[in-house]
Image 1 (cartoon, helix red, strand yellow):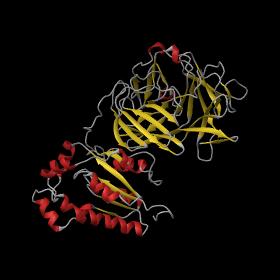
Image 2 (spheres, helix red, strand yellow):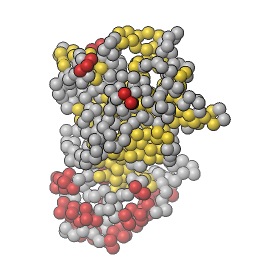
Image 3 (cartoon, helix red, strand yellow):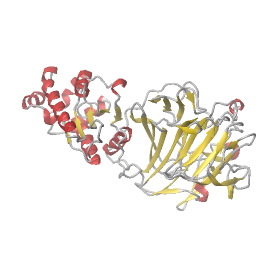
Image 4 (tube, helix red, strand yellow):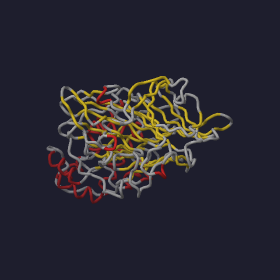
Length: 510
């Protein structure tokens, strides 16, 4: 794959301590991309190899010709306009500076793992010239990449295929030929030893930045806490020292909305979920909102988090779930993936629950557009009773109009999509001069719009509009409507995103 004319030749420099999996990951990356690759070990002199095999760490003087040889190969590939992958431990900042300086096409991929995990890997590795005994010297030299180096950081306590998938996505090099959903984890996948430190009621806070955009994702539930563009908040979210309330930004797995009575029948078994909405005798919004999600990969502009949904009463199925948030020139993109890692078929649905705002005190004057031909009717418990066209009713928002005093807690379907397969829900300022588009992509068959009239905190009612991307409507576990059934090893993907816009000269620009 040649580099585009006028653009620096892309090179990926895979760094990390010995035993972090650089060779394996670089090989898989190169195979996926069709790029040549070289391993740093190939550039060591026989004397260096012998020194390390004898248990003696290399000095800066030893490494100087080695780094020069790696840099020369990178220059050779760049001069030939051949994108390439190369590994190098590059433990010190000065080493990385030497390899990055004057090479604008190089992206840094740092494989991060705990000392305990890497030691276990080295001790299990046989026939390699680098002994486990030298690991302490590696960590003594290690100066982790800093933000100004713009690294993509991937945690290695996951299968190599998952490491590569995360790296490709956050590097903006996702393979279009690859399946949308990730592969199920291998039996050899190590258990995470890298749970983030807790920080406040929602745990660790992972911040993304790109241009004037800023987003924050939290450890608790992998939720989207904040998103702004040019200093203007686009979500009615919550602060770092606040608990999550009203589902704000939460991921809804393995079902969105409600399951009536929490009871359903699947593959001949009668199952009972916990009644998490006791006032209506329903199970609501899945099982993963209140569990910690762990960091899988991060960069300046993106983060991937994940968790395991273990078999439990009411849902005796095993899922591996991840969510990736990435800022682009076009806004915030979200990808929620799940894989059935068990041996039995599993019912599945997914959604997410952000509240949009255009800065008004109440949403009444905001202009809403929902490109949907039908809405679901519901009973007093919020469960669907049928479907009807919106045409000629107060629920027809196919053309932008003020929300007014209307109370919405309504699921829409029959979505009109553009050439890219996206349906776009728009919330605009009363002036019509600015707003936010929430687009619904792959895996989204329904959207719930909620004006917050019944929130438990009266002061937060009608401050924002929840626009919830959903793969299925409420009660899908009982009715089967829109339900996904995951066979063992199969996966599902939900894609949605936010796109801020302003009007200049009568045209909306982003």
